Length: 164
Length: 283
Image (cartoon, rainbow over all chains, first blue to last red; front, top):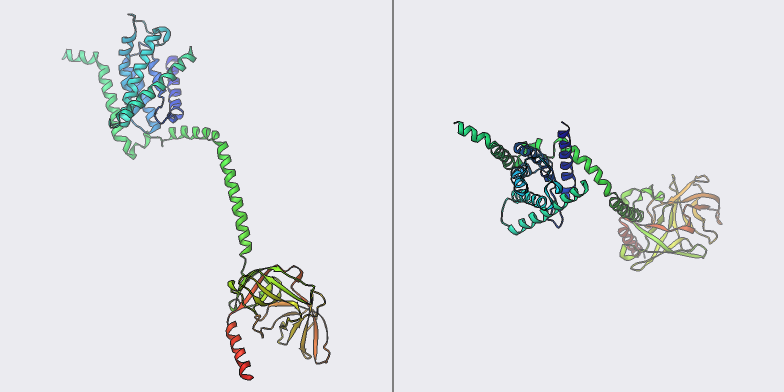
């Protein structure tokens, strides 16, 4: 129960942070950090996939409601939640079935960094592609994905560093 | 069947994934364009409150620039008000607040506004120069008044200036009457002081009291009837004993005449032409 409360707190905090502050950041007109992905990234490794996807759907929908982009963040976030366990297994070297929360310490620095980068890239690719909904300006889309992902990743590691 | 069921149970997350994505895309394509999605967009109560709160907070960060803008705007408005007041003051041509003209029928004359730029009161023949001339429509022998009373008669005009024969001039001769009666005389000045003039040739049988108001008679073509001149201050007999000789306290303070109106009567030219013609035929 306590665990659920903590998760809800985190979810609400991240949603508010995203819609009130981060969505107003447009560095160079391209890069916007989508820090709410941090929630799924830090879910315990033994969280059922369905539960992850439901979390992702709810958070994504909440953010969509605020930004009037119904379905956009939800779709991208569900996709990320869907592929996350696969990546987690892929980047975890040890053959363990213990549950763990992904971090530098539990996974090792390099696997954790890779895991974060790949997950964020998947999410941003999906989100920004849906958003622009065309490949007409493919270079621009790519630029936005890369810059936004870089910004999100920097934010994630900043939080990690502070929470240590 | 069992195998299918097993398959579904094993890969149920696929089903959920597809379902959630289907919902997301359905929302994406459907609701974004419709007003029915009212509940799901930022107009609903919860999101509205949150945005309102955040707007309230973030507005504090802009207070400095908002303040500066307001100050700028304030200053702009203040200068505008000053300018408006200035132009309002200078545009007050209407006769409503000119006491000396309040008895005139409003349709019988035009008014030109002018400022006194040269004036004297202590010479034998005092002239006043005003800053409007023939280009502004001023012609010789138009009457000049200020807010209190008669000032004089236009004597000569140049394109931009006019010289006015002040009441305080030996050439000045204005036909006046006592208000309420039709007895008239002519206003003269005797070079003595700038506050008094004399009304000559008033018939002996005219009835009046000290303090009665003297206005223009309207018999000359210069002033319309009823322009304020002054009040009766003292009375005496003329040298030949046939008429009164009234000392008039002038309503106009000639020492500080500055804002004057030039009166152009309607039909002034016509009356003038008729009179000069009749004089010629008489000769």
